[in-house]
Each structure stands twice: as C-alpha cells, then as structure tokens.
Image (cartoon, rainbow, N blue to C red):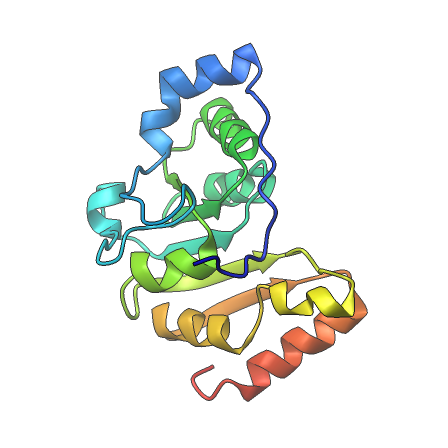
Length: 192
C-alpha cells in the first residue's frame, strides 16, 4: 500500500569522484539498515543504538533532510562533543555529505538513507535525541499537496517522543503559510 511521502526521490548516477568517495568512506558514515516495503524505509522493529553507532555516549542531534551536508558538517566541526545523524533520501546528497565530512575530518556524523516520517518512529527510541533539526522541508506549495508536508500533527508527536526532556525541535522555512502551519502544529502538540 502506497504511503503519502513528503519528498520526491530523484536519483542520478554518482559522478566518478563521489562514487570513489563512497567506496572508500561510505561505510564510515552511512548506516545500513534493514528495509521494509521500499528502499527509503526502515524495517519494523529495527532500533538504532546511538552509543553503538557512534562508539560513544554524547548528545545526539538529528537533521531531517541534510541535503549535501553543509549545515551538518559545519555543526559537527563546531561541536565535536555532539553526535549528528542525518536522515536523507537523496543518494547524491548523501555522497556529497560524506565527501564534505571526509574533507572536514569529522567523524561524529552518520547518515541513514531513509524517509524521516516512516523511519523516525521505528529507528529511534523514546527520549534518545537532544535536538531535531528540520530546515527548509519541501513546502508543497499547492493546497491540494499540503497533505505531503512533513511537519504535521503525527510527525510532531514522533519528534516529541524521541526528544529528551528539555530537547529542542528547530524548524525553518521561507514560506509564510508553512511557517504558520509549523507554529500551529507545534502549539497543538501537547508533548512539545
């Protein structure tokens, strides 16, 4: 059964340099997970253990859709005492993120190729994340497509579930109506 997705997955073959980077360093940064119905899903029952994944216990920041990793790599360099997990569906973006991480020499980043709306409830346990970042998700401008927007009541409940007490959900958009919707969703969520 098809699910409503907040993204459109457009993949292109990786350039040779990115392919080589992934072959050499992908295993250091990309977390392979068992899949469910599709390539961007996580199998039910699979939990990520952040301490095992990063090899240490540290505050965890999850970025939804880090794209090519500019923000994530800059943050990982600035805060080496934190761990950063990206949930991304765009394979060339993941490859560019890995390339940036390697060039920056940071090792406190991991990325999972997964749809955050489907993966978050499965992948992360209760009160395991210090911050969730959702910067500039697709605004789905047409009214008939608003159902595809990532920031909705169900997603807010999942974010609240994974956040530790006092954790933060940082949101950004450059679309006025989406900003108002985000505010309304956060205000309506009793656990936030």
